[in-house]
Length: 313
Image (cartoon, rainbow, N blue to C red; front, side, top):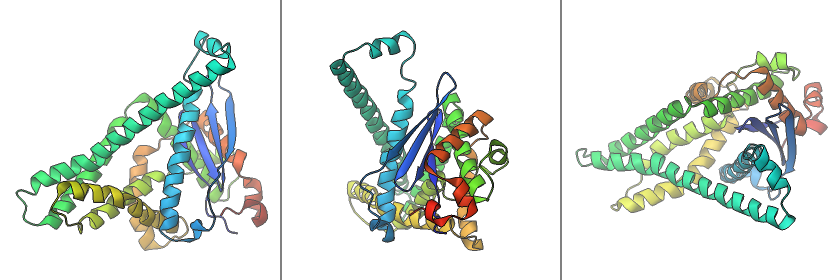
């Protein structure tokens, strides 16, 4: 069987699950019903998926686009309540379009601000601190190593801090539901609430593991960047991020396909990080995860070994 793994993402009060060029967004609405939308991804070329490193960069950007789109879609179900929602429904078609454009612009602005802040916190801040320390450290490779360690520490602290907020806690619970659903299927069990509940919430192909591998690999690559200009060094670091993402993707892809002891050992730090970014979900969250899986993946045929219906490119 050519199964290479169904993947997903936790979103606001829900789960996005992707299988090949299809992905489903399942959300638990305020009335406690589960709403599921299925989308087809256009523009993903199978030929690129066969080129190592390049496919990682390609998949990285597509995952960002799909993930942000799913997040915006799930958020739209909770933007308005009560009278405000009725007023929107009573607007004319032209007024609704204007309102939708305004909402998309506001969301786009928020995402842009978040991106800039992320670059500042995880790229510029550790580099700036290491540059100051470089005045007292003669070895530039050691300075770059310290920069990488600082980046990892900041990342861990950031995750630990935001995990204390109620909204992020629930998102991490949905993240756990996503992993448990995938692990349930890959363990050869039927996708039921009971079986999902007893499955592990940690998974080697997780985005958390991917980000952590990116941080670790960047430590060693950035150690060999030599520029007199601090600005050029920072720009080169940003330009190399997609390449590092491509390398990290190959590792995550390999880790998901093998039980090699060395690969498992190298995957362990990412799994440890998942203990922060995933939480045990309740049964209602598990049901949302199951709904998301079933919208894009025939798990029954997969368990029966039907390659024609279940293979994922």
